[in-house]
Length: 107
Image 1 (cartoon, rainbow, N blue to C red):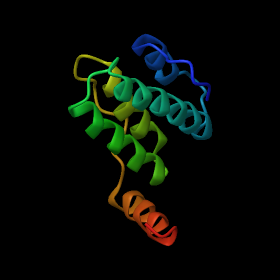
Image 2 (image 1 turned 30 degrees about the vertical axis):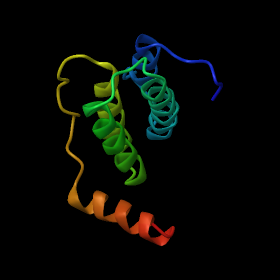
Image 3 (image 1 turned 90 degrees about the vertical axis):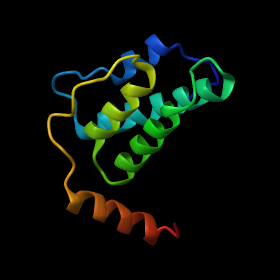
């Protein structure tokens, strides 16, 4: 990612669901948007507070291999209203597998 600061609207556009996106594309765009959002929070252009919780949730979902849920959590960072839930809830098995991957990396 470049060091250019993205606006909330630009970040939201990265996270906009598009027909035909592969999970890998969703994960890549979400990671890019998360980095931009965290830079914005650090710079003060995006409010902190609950947005940090959403960023942490998005990172966890990415680690667990749940890109749709990660993108939804990341969209909540730059969206000033409650979003509808993802089309499906992440399963405990997916989240446990993600936790296992995290632990195997020394986490």
